[in-house]
Image (tube, rainbow, N blue to C red):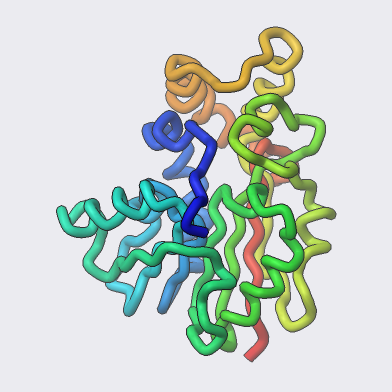
Length: 236
């Protein structure tokens, strides 16, 4: 764990994708409550977006030492809410008696090789009635050099994601998001594949295509998209 350094370079690129972040957060926020564990908090971009009330605790768990320093600085400067705390490590480093009402994996589970075991370990750290919220990249057909460059093991379908949970939790909600983005990504991989999107491409996607993608998502009943969201609740 002391030697862990995240190999991706996309966090800074995507932190300005405000339309996208506001869009996916609108589906996630209603399910967040109580003591929150954010696994793989990164540089805190999603923390700032999702931590919108005075939680008893919002624990930012991050294995990369450089990102831990960034998170600590943001808390000290008041750029993250006072309820936020930072801890360096992985989920398995947390004691089982330390439980949470909400556990978040926002663009994280695809970086974990043993994702099924990770899900099981997360459920053990959920309070009764607690929720696990997962957001992951969708469709293996879209797996690209970009996925490889930032350490993705996989992209998910509804079936592969829903096969992960152990007994004791039930599905509350799910949906695919950004249907137009999925089509654009598929086309880009065939016309001009690259490891990383440019800042211009991200701006175009976020500012000009996302508004149309939201409309298309509605008309496809959230059954198509480059991102998949699932919410599970532990039995009481």
